[in-house]
Length: 378
Image (cartoon, rainbow, N blue to C red; front, side, top):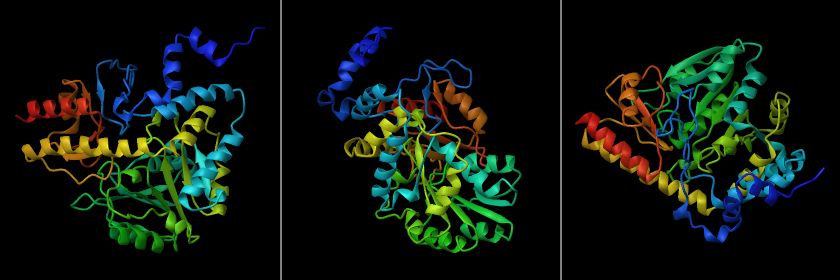
């Protein structure tokens, strides 16, 4: 049998030119990063020309440095990923000011939410969560036989913590808070969030989904890892999918007290693959692309909201990588109107069916959004 090197393999697959570029990291500057071009199909529909602003992705990722590390990691895909999981776990622990026993590296956000539901709701009980919010935890909890209390957001589309607390009872096994909330983009006042989670953690398990935490633009806004450090019943969820731009590689992590992490790990089906680990291990050390992504997101949100202002359309102050605005049109119809301009927006979020969630994209994509909105509302 003849064995080939990584470079030979890349050349034979028609990738040599790209690989050479990837290895020359010094040739790149962040301003030259090209966005992801979606040539695949979504939901079985061809969408070669569609601008996909429906899933809150970072079109600029991964960074050139991360891409280089992914290619280099092909030399290691013949190995199991244990050592690389340990390395990433230690890096995350250092970043969060905790120990490796406080960290569980997982395969994407969905796995984190599902294993938490399995750990605490598989035997029934109740889950309290806002509505609308990210549904993965809620849907899986119901599939496990739990009852989900969906608590409507308040008039400002913020999470109603007071009403959520009133729904908690002796059967409540978990309280779910997505902060910033998806799809509204709102955050809770820092003191209220900390007080609520501290209080609820005395009664039940609190799950704080912080997928969009990196985009929060409030100075010194607290992560609930501060409560993990106090050994409270709190689980914090983080991801590499958003600001780091590696959603397709499916990797993130949970932060909790060591005994909680051990319990969650017992429900984990598998580990992240070697390429995802290489990407995350590189991304967590890279500051320039992180800041680049934050800045581009601010610019894109401003382009959207400035256009909405022109037409007097209501929107929330977003602390994430999307804008949630009142389209005044049923979302199923509004989505069709946007598709006529080759733009795919977010799905319906009940009960706010005349509101639209639109993700931030590249400057060129935002220009297309501005043009489409002007045509629709003029």
